[in-house]
Length: 262
Image (cartoon, rainbow, N blue to C red; front, side, top):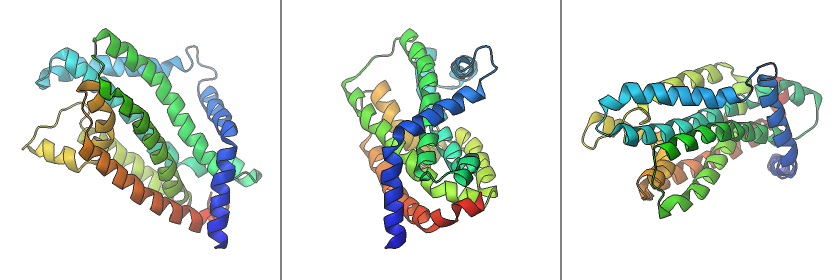
């Protein structure tokens, strides 16, 4: 009961300091681009360049028109940038915050929130570019757009449990982080971002068994087609339920050793 109570107190205390987590996340972004002329605009510009080149190269390889494919690609890659940073940065949370972990008595959940907020702040800059592209391509909005709110909340929740699950493991075994980075690079090509899945084909099978497909679908399908992918919601909900349990067990059993591992 002692470890469980301490872990619960960490989460309550951490969320009570959410403003500090946002300030730390903002400082991280400012530090990264401090001496850059364009600053954080590089995030937006790099996204625009990626979409422009990929849409030109890959549109001819898909059955969609270039306008529809650009919308499909824009939403998919914007969401992928969020997913990738939530996972990779989340896994590196305690290693990245080593100085704070060793020199302060703040609850570790603050650093988890810092990582998730940093991912969302980066995503906001990407979203600006994505909205511009979608507006120019004349995307049609549908009534199902309201599902984006619970979808992004679920993304936020995923960022929390992924960080709580992987950050202690990466602090103990640094190879886990490098392995995750490698896996995410491969998963980019195995996820329907620059290609479209087709039923009854190998690509369709790969897409279905890829959990990232369903994370994309709960946002992309309401935006593009006005449909709510019930199956994808069930899969993502199931993944989150299992992930929360594993994250709670991992964080509760390792929190006392994190400072020694970093």
